[in-house]
Each structure stands twice: as structure tokens, then as C-alpha cells.
Image (cartoon, rainbow, N blue to C red):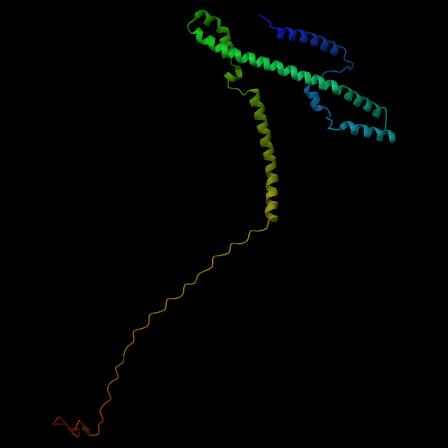
Length: 247
């Protein structure tokens, strides 16, 4: 396979740096075992700005004579100085490590994207080329491979971690419910009661005015004529209209 000038220079650089790093690792002046993630988890994690606090504590310990064979402030300061001395080297190594890691990832990703495009072209041509189809069998088997957990519909590592986090969240919610009920009861007890709704004013409709009763005209009878014995020139002394009236 042809190697371009860029890769020739890169290979030379990587070879030299790898050799130098190997020598630096073998001659590292501190004899310490690599820490596992569990070791780091169980260790005491310093806060930001802990260096100044450690120095201040050392001064107070010396002033009050609290050093002992089991706990010596001088050893504490030596450990702090070791950490301070290694800090620039750690920063440099992390910087170059990230740069190398990013370059390696980018190159791999670009190569894989191009390989997928070529594989699609080869698949199309293999439809009419039996020899090419036979050559692609191992590559096709690679693409068609599925992990047994996928075939058996088992949860993946990502799904398992997500389910664990979900269970933790559900337990937190379950523990928080009783406290939430107490807080709600306290809030309800101290909350200002809402004002009672004011009833709508009752509008009294005026009673309808009764219609006046029809007036009844009472016809007074005409006064009886005077009975002075003469009515219209007719005497009533026992005779009426010429007829005798028996008294």
C-alpha cells in the first residue's frame, strides 16, 4: 500500500514519541501502582483551592505542636509539593493525549465513512458479478453480524444503565412522597383561607299594581213624591185614577 509523505512523517514522529514515552514511563521517579476507577472512587477528593488550605493547616499544626509519628505535617507538605510539581506535566500530557486521540478518531471516522460508500457501490456491482459477490461474503457477514443480546432482545449496556438510573429516580420519588405530603399539609394549614364567595344580590321585583276595580254606579232612587194628599193634581184620599182604594 502506498504511503504518502504526510504519513511517512507521522510514522516517524509516532515512533520517536512512543520510544521517548516508554523511556519516561520506565524511569518515572515515583513508584506507584496504577489506580483503578474503584480506587479513585473510594479516595478522598480535594476541593478546588485545597492547596492553600493544606499550607494554612500545616502552619497551625506546627504552631500548636500537633505533629506526631502517625501524622506529620512535613510529610503532608511533601505530598502537596509532589502534586504541584506533577501538575504541569499532567496538563501537557492531557493536552497532547487529547490532540492525538482526536486526530486518531477523526481519521478512523473519515475512513469508515468512505468505506461505507465503497461497500454500497460494490454491492450494486456484485449483483451482476458472481466473483465479486463471492469476495464480498466475508464483508457482508461482518455487516450482518448482530450481538446475541440483540438477537435475544436482551437489554444492552446502555439500556441497563438507563434502567438502573430510572429505578434510582423512582426510589427517590417514592421516598420524597411522604415528605411532600407533610409539606403540603403544613402549607394548607398555614395558608390564608380563600374569601367566601359573595352571593349575588337578590333583585326584588316590584309587585304588580292591581288593576282598579270597575266602578259601580249606584243609581239612587228618585225621591218619593210628597204625599200631601195631592199628586199632580190628583187627590189620594182613597182614590187613584178614579178608582176607589179601600183603606
